[in-house]
Image (cartoon, rainbow, N blue to C red; front, side, top):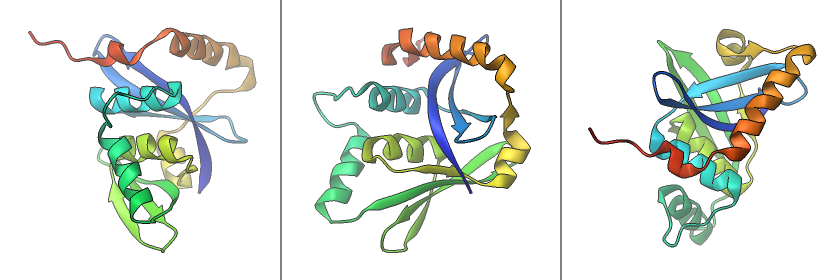
Length: 157
């Protein structure tokens, strides 16, 4: 397992599909995962330190874990099958629970829990970006600084 940092979320054009971009700590691979608009908003809120007036689902789950004394120790992105990513929530008690990566990432950001990706997932879906292309990643980061969670709202047509 390799530790991953959340670079941020953005909307991929022209499909208008949100993605979360993770980066391998100490490596040069990036892992893009397509997610839903609700999860994109939840991740963006957590990254920006925004607290809604009432708890969103991921905030509620964090509060419930605290109330029952359970500690989330790791989030693992474990598999990629037929274009679908799989993740696990790992608790201090040793219990592991299957989760969608987007939900697991949103929860990890709220609890300060490290995120890991399996070597197989990074080999299959990771994108190596050498240091000389780092300026492109910096442009992506600048874009992320200018985007707000409201940009992920779905349009009803």
